[in-house]
Amino acid sequence: MHLRLGVFLLMIVSTEGRAQNFEIFSADINSTLNNSNSVGLRNASININLPLILKKGMLTNSLLFSGYAIDYNTDETMNTATIENFETLKYTLGYFTEINDTWGFRTNISPTISSNFESGITMEDVFLNGSLAFIRSNKKSSFHIGLVYNTNFGTNKPIPIISYSRKVNNTVSYSLGMPITKIEYVINSANKANFYLKPKGFYSNISDNLIINTTDKAEKVKYKSIQSGVNYSHAIDDFWKLSLNAGYQFSSKYELLNNNESVYEFKAKNSFFVGLNLKFDLLKNKKN
Image 1 (cartoon, one colour):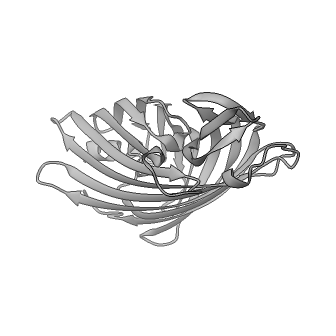
Image 2 (cartoon, one colour):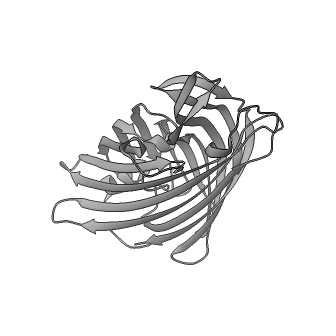
């Protein structure tokens, strides 16, 4: 059981770690607060997960839809009308199995379509995300090592997975490492808070290439940042959970790319952000 709980800490299709649950449904709304002379980002997403217990291991199916709206600086001279909205649709097939009493293995593959959809869908709109990790676990702690490629992190390069997670007591637990670090505090059976540091962003195709300065051509957009914040979660009942996110976003960068080389960079200042999340947890308070 401990190995499976460890897997949920890093599984891309899940956003919680220590609880004995599986998020069948989640919906998110997030927005950076207004910042003059800077690009702002608003996004909303819906995620549906379906787990399947096999004779050996667990199979997961997940479908994620995300929409991104860009608020450009009003002084921007470029015509940004065609790159104000981007959508992402991602299907994830994941598998986890125990190797022995100590080690487990988890992998997933996520074909993804992400574009501003100004014209028909082509192979340029298709990306292949995925991850693999080995997990060493005992009753109190777990260690994760592997690789993840996830355009929802705002990058088109693999990111190492290396983290150490530990349950200190029935109130406090933590996970230190990459790509996500967090400390969780359980207030009572219905409320908890966690403090986190994680990457945030998106990487998408521009379906009709954008011409810049009459000579440069932009094919892709990349928005990436680091978020440091607090998530306060309240269990409405045994299955539904509502949570509020708030924090500070730094190292923000938003640019247009050609052959993965930057051809134009917008102003993207550090800013505060807020968000709201609704989840439906299956298997809560049940043994798995």
